[in-house]
Length: 248
Image (cartoon, rainbow, N blue to C red):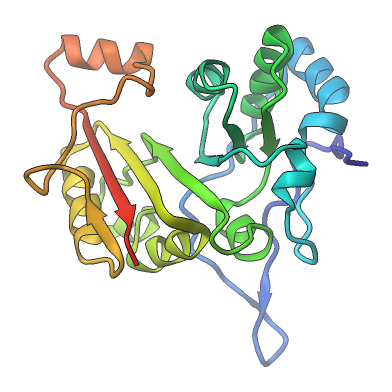
C-alpha cells in the first residue's frame, strides 16, 4: 500500500477549511486530542505494521476496499476504537468480514496494532485521523455494511452537547456511506446521551430502528463487554445499545 506513519508527537488531524477571506474556519470537534506517550511496544508496532495495516489520510483519494483487503467481503467501520481490545476481538471472531478502525490517539493505534500483530490478523486496517474528514473524503458512497461507535465521549455538560459526535448531519453522512440494508450500531453508558442518540436516529430520514419497541436493543453477542462496562453494570450503571438499518 506504500503507507507510512510520520513519527511526530501527533499525526496531522486538524486539517482546516478555508473561509472566503482566507482565514481558517474553526471546526467543532467531537474529541480533544490528548498528548500521550507511546510505550516501546506501541512504537515498535507502529513501525512494523503501519506499512501494511495503516492508512494515511489523503483527501484526494478514496479507498478501494477490494484492493485494500484483497477480497470482496463486507466492510465494518468502527469510529473511536480506543486501545483496540474489543475492536480486535470482533475482527478475530469474524475473519470473513473486513474491519476498518479510526482512532485519533496514537497510543491507542499503537496498542491496536500490537494486538493485530499478536493475533496475526489480516482483516484489519487502521487510521489515525478525524473520522468526519475520513468519511467525507476517503470512504466511497454505499460501501460499508456497518458503522459502529461504542461509548463515544458524552460531553455531558449542556454547553458541550454540540460536541457530541452523534448529530443529525453526521448520521446523514454515515447513511450516505452505508450500503442499503447497512447498519449503524451505537452504545453508551450515559443515559442522557442514549436518549439523544435515539432521538437523532429516530428522526433521521432513511433509517429504521431494529428494536421491536422502537427503543434500545440488548447487547448483541458480537459486541464484547469491556472491563469498564462490567464494572459499571456491577455498580448498577446502565448501558444502552442502538441499532438502526438503512432502508432507503
